[in-house]
Image 1 (cartoon, rainbow, N blue to C red):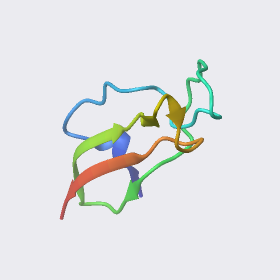
Image 2: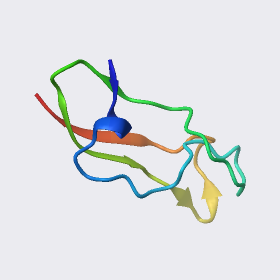
Image 3: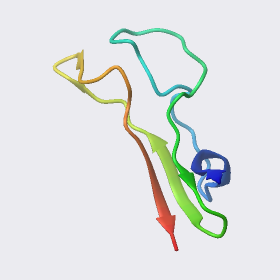
Length: 69
């Protein structure tokens, strides 16, 4: 399997982490991944930083990839 962050055709420029622990902090590792089989192309990879009324909706940010078969 391939990590979509590593094979994306559009360079990833977002946050360097996918969890927040419900607070602002400096974390430099990603702990959430999307893996794809060999031969599947990744057009885009991103980590969405989402807050509602300045409150984190989860302790993990959504990770998404646009893939092509």
